[in-house]
Image 1 (cartoon, rainbow, N blue to C red):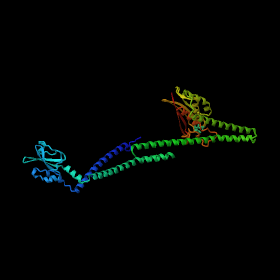
Image 2 (tube, rainbow, N blue to C red):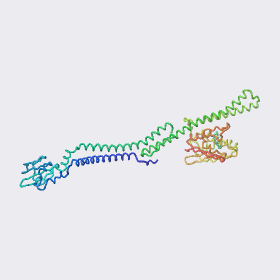
Image 3 (cartoon, helix red, strand yellow):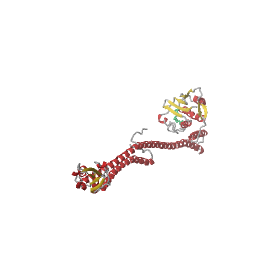
Image 4 (cartoon, protein in one colour):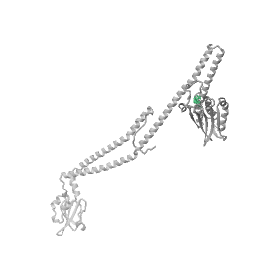
Length: 459
Ligand code: ADP
């Protein structure tokens, strides 16, 4: 079986996880983009001028050129420093530094991240001018004027909504893809309560589901076959009962008729009475034969039945059977052709039953074919098997019945004449061969002949 078709559920789950991570990352980017976009629009709306935040425009090269009032207005201040100590502050000092090393005095920028500073010396006096940095001022100004919390919430809600919609869509698609084959399976399983003939699934889904589909269809096919076999057994049982009743009823009806004629005194002539009694005797014999055959068949068919197996030389065994039937073969005017090797070929056999099996075949040949027919019996050893062939060049068996020949009550004579066999002979033969662990096959053609091949294991 090839299960390569379809993507595996495992890879699809990994793909879904990757898509989820990508959607999540896109969500984060979206969130920040929305936030920045809103702030940008809001900043534009409230007229925040970026130039106002450029420290270079305020902190000039020379101290005298600095617009001190503008500096103070924009959050800056000036510290007058002597010997590293602040002696005067112009504006509102917002940091905590009150002591400067010499190094800090000379054009040192970035004392902290919130303020930029620049040192000047004018006529022996040192000034340190401090001005809030761009980002500090912008964030402060914006924070004061813009409702950041609102924008944060809007961005968050929008992002969550978008990400959720994508997730829900992804989940719906995944569930639909997963549930479609399961629904089909469920429907077909429900149908199984009414029989298997119309049951079977056909979909192309993930590899794992395709595998379940194959297994399900195979199991249904097996169940359907078993159901059909059961039906056949039931039919065969019914047919057996019908045929037995017919085969036994016919001679009984005749016996009743003949005996009634005698008992009622309708037949007074002694000669006629003898003929009638002879009929009764023959019909009783027929019933006896049918019941015997039926008894043997049901005995062999019983699960408890065990063969009495013994190690026996099959060459010798076959020679003994032929000797037993030699007179019958002669009387019927048959030509006998025997090919049995001298070599001993051992097998585990129940001599009584296997003799019955082979005798059925020989008797059939003698019964159904005319004088002058050649009957050939041969034995061949092939590897660990031995093959017994019983063949005649008689009338043969038509194709229409040869396929069912080993079934009970199958006869070439469709009218089921009372003088025919029981129709159980070959069914009994096959049962015996199968009980020996062997096999039997028929090769026959009308007007050409009939050949039975029995294959047994040697030891
Ligand atoms: P039956 O008791 O009728 O002989 P079997 O099962 O032994 O039942 O045989 C089934 C039928 O097969 C017979 O009725 C007969 O028509 C046919 N048959 C069996 N062996 C031969 C044969 N050697 N030549 C021709 N017909 C045969």
